[in-house]
Amino acid sequence: MLMAAKAKKPVCLHAGGVALCEMGVHMSIFDYIGISGTHKDRFFEYSGALHEHFPRPCTIKNGHFVAPLGPGLDADLLQSSVDKYIYPSGPYWSKDDETVKYKPFKGIMCANFTPINNDGSVNLT
Image (cartoon, rainbow, N blue to C red; front, side, top):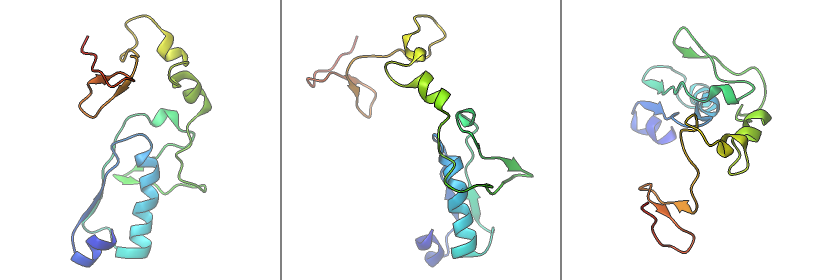
């Protein structure tokens, strides 16, 4: 944001991930109060997914994010969500039915989403 202000360039905060909207509100406030002093050419991406996993999800009113009322980044996950989705022991991963969108696999994944086994071999099955 500081470089954008120096170069007089617009800013669009990225918020397309888990808790990025919740945390990004603070950056937007910092930009307004401490850097730009304006809303002109300031944008903030909104992702409407996964907010149900936070005790204080971000809110939007009249097309604008609402400033949080409490301290912190509001990125704390609900314990019920952690318990349900913790991998591999959470109940979400132990289901053996069609409601599970992503089946667990052994090994790790590289950036191109090819399953890589712990020994470095590729598993294409």
